[in-house]
Length: 299
Length: 93
Image (cartoon, rainbow over all chains, first blue to last red; front, side, top):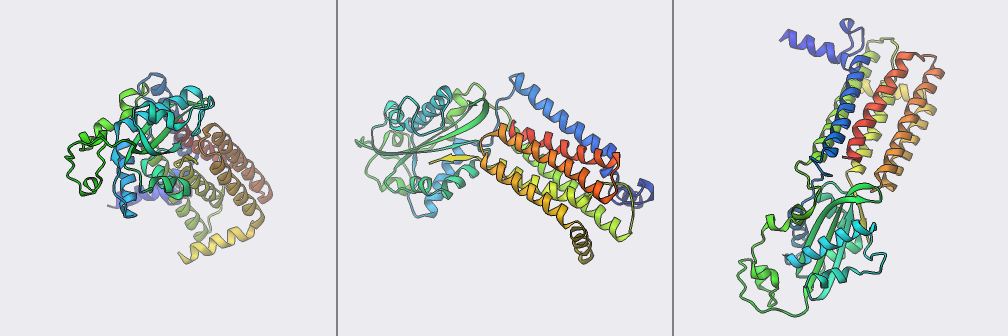
């Protein structure tokens, strides 16, 4: 027990054995952190160029669908049905944005979002579109939409019945990013079919859409990005690196706080950087990481 | 805990201008990161500028403090670039 305590003190507490500077803050350890960070950077690049991985995020259409209906339920609205035609429209829209290099509701050649919906075979009476770019987590996408009045209005519109999503990875404007397209709609001409849905919210609507022929939502079928994206991610790297960054910053901050407190308390004088400056720096970087984990949405 | 804040306050008040300047640069960095959302290349540039300022600030502060030493500068550089490479992975995963 005493050995463990001594070991911990050597690494975290300024004392004679570590020349009055915790081992984890000494230059050799700081160099070690830099080398590890460099190895990670190079490894990620190698993995990407080796075509093992694509651009990886933690966004899935399954999660987006669940969160969208969760928000509608919170606001007393019936859930939207997952519609494969709208999902196809969303996927075509996302691909079009990558191929033509734009991020907007209307393409540079004048193509409207509605062209994609009609092109997928979905005849709508009312339709809407939400876009998002550069997000890494599904919940952040839906949160951002809910915080924007126009997107929120789209998401909570009671005359929509169907929804489709696409999550596409690709290169836009010279850098890899993830585009999220959410297409809403209500069918123009109801197709009367036997409604097999067990959900009471679905049966309340007399209109049965294409999706209702297979009313049970199949999450694995809904992840369209997996079917068609050539740079399909096999592993989600972003959450792992995000956590790694947070853990490293917390570790370094803890060591700096301990060191600052003890050196001041023991009145230790030594040649060293200012812990408060390092802590402030890490604090701003931490908030910066939080900003990076958010993306952008378009009105 | 009380004495920790006492030491913190003492340190900040001794070098109020230096730390205010540093906090201001941090706020600018955050504004830039937020304004450049979805543009990882420009965000990386903002991060690099902030890290450069952090290192230069370190030099300036220790010159004023009369405690500039090569070891101190290396400490700022190592922390700055470790953070840079770690965040670069997040910007270009």
